[in-house]
Each structure stands twice: as structure tokens, then as C-alpha cells.
Length: 414
Image 1 (tube, one colour):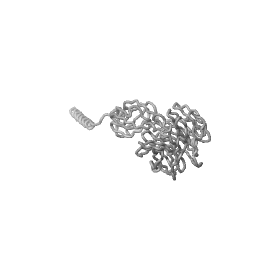
Image 2 (cartoon, helix red, strand yellow; image 1 turned 135 degrees about the vertical axis):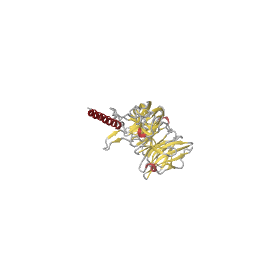
Image 3 (cartoon, helix red, strand yellow; image 1 turned 45 degrees about the vertical axis):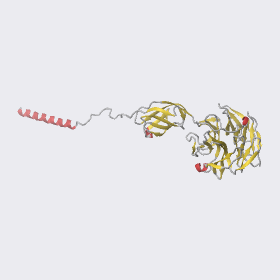
Image 4 (tube, helix red, strand yellow; image 1 turned 90 degrees about the vertical axis):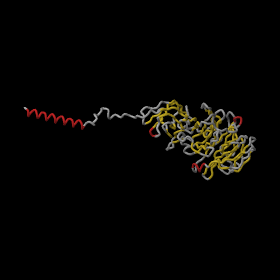
């Protein structure tokens, strides 16, 4: 009996020691949780918008918008700015400031921000995006009504020379009527408004034509000689003189009494515009020679005489040979705009001669044929018809309305 009790005692001691060693060895093992494989999610601070500049409205797809706030990130790939349901393009970012361009959507939107370190979105900010570009005329399905050149009166009516049709007047509320039926011309390459609402036009021959105020049949106003002249561009200066040019050896000044004189200028002139720069009135001309395109300018003195020509902007050096400038216009602050056949069709030239293309992510890649400032801050241009790779019609030749957020310089004569 004593032997049995001794063995039981020894077994009990062995079991106790073994259990102690086991539990000591396993003391660092954590019991698995049912939720151990579920991610806890981002734990950073929620982004906060405190202000936006411009504060209320911007041009969709164009304006650099600055958002100020808290808990942003410096890594632009780790943050998104939403305008409604679409994300904008972030240019720069820091923990307190983001610069972004909105997507090309117009209308009222809510701005909000997300980061990859915080699960909630920021607060929202109510905002308005205006369209920078809008197809104006004709209807999107109309490929028979083809605008070629335009000019706009002080009331905002557009006069459009339409191919093989005549001149159409388009009111500010988009009502169009035939203003002058086609005569011998196919279309006018350039038009200008004169005093009393008379419309002047040229087509590439030796004459300048007029259409009476209120519309009607066109007639020759002045016929220049020799008969080989090709007048394709006309422009008024502040003195009431008309300047006429084309592929000739001279630029012609036509006075209100129809008398005219010439100034040697042996270039092919594809566009002209008068602009008063400070105290000097200049005639600017886009010229072509040997596949090179240049903007030249000449001062017009107080007697209406043309001074020495100078190169103002070497277009081909900036954008390459073989491209054409179809029209020139100016904003009131002196910024020049050029209608071209570049893939991005409208080029701007600042007063310091810095240059770039206008609204590159907005304007469709099709040549611009004609430019005219409307009322307010709107510039209109004619965009060439767009076809697909097979030559099938996609979009009509169209007058496009652009919001430039600044007014144009005056056209003289009207």
C-alpha cells in the first residue's frame, strides 16, 4: 500500500512539473481572434476644405482652382479632388493647399476631397463650372450650312458668310436669317462692318463689295487696278481708312471717298488687324513667304500713312514651317489671338511675346478659319468641319463661342 501511494505521489509531481513547463513555454502565444484578418482601414485625419479660389465659379477644364484647408497630402497620387462624380487633374499639393483643374463639365457641382490615409471624404463645397467652349451655329446635324468668315456688330449679332449660300445674320439668342443672298462669290474671305451698319466684304479679286445696312444684295464698292489684284483681307483704322491686301506686291489704303493709294509689301497677306498699342496705331499682317509664316506690323501715322514694317512675331520659328494663320484679333489688354491650322487651332501671343495654345484640352483639333469678338468676354471662331479617318462626316463646320474672361479690343469702322 505504501509502495502504491509513493508511485501516485511521484506521478502527481511529474504531472505538475510538466504542466508548469508547458504553460510557461506557451505564455507568449496570443489566442487568435475571429476578426484578426479584417483590415482596420485608414487611420489618418479627415481632409477639410476651408476656402476655394476663385471662390464661386471657374471655367470647366481651364481655370487653375486653389483649394485651401487641412489634412491634405503632398503626394498628388494619394489624393483626389472630385467635382460631382468626376475627379479633377491635380497640379500641386501640400498638406494645406491643392491646385487643381476641374474636368470639362459645366453646371453646379460639389467639391470634395479624399486621401488614401483617411476613410471619410472631406466636407463639400458648392461650386459653379461654366463652359469655356460651346458650339454655337449651326445645328450639330447640319452639314450643308457652312460658315466661312464672321464679324459681329455692337449689339452682338453675328454675320456669317456661308459657303454657297450668302451672308446669314445670327442674333444673340441664336435666331438665324438670310441677310444677303449669294451673288457671284462662293463666300467672302473677310468681312468688316462700317459706319451706319454697312457690311464690307472681299473674296480674292480686285474689288471690295458692300451689303447695305439691314441686308440685301451686295454690290461692288470700289474696284482697284490692275485687274490681277487679289484682295482677300480688309480692315478699318481709327481714321476711317480701309486697308486691303492679299497675294499682291502692295497693301492698299482706301479712303472713305473711294480714292486709294498703295504701299509696297511683297508678301502673301492671310490676315490683318488694326490695334492701338499705347499711343501708336499699328496695322498687323500675317504673311507667308517660302512656307514661312510671320506676323509683321507697320505704324499708321496721324495722316493715315503706313510706316516702316517690322517683324512682330516669328510664328514659324515657334510652331514650325507650313502652318497658316487665317485670322488675327486682340483682347483689350493687347493679347493677340491667331486662328491657325495647327492641331491646337488658336494661338495666343502675350505682350512680352510669350506664346501658347488656347484651351488645349478643350478645343477640338480642327483648323480655325475666322475670329471675331462679341459682346462681353466672348470670342467666336469658325472651326472647320470634322470628318473621321474614312472621310465620313462627324461634326459640321461650326461657329464656336469661347469664354475668354476678358473683353476684346475694338474693331474700327463700325
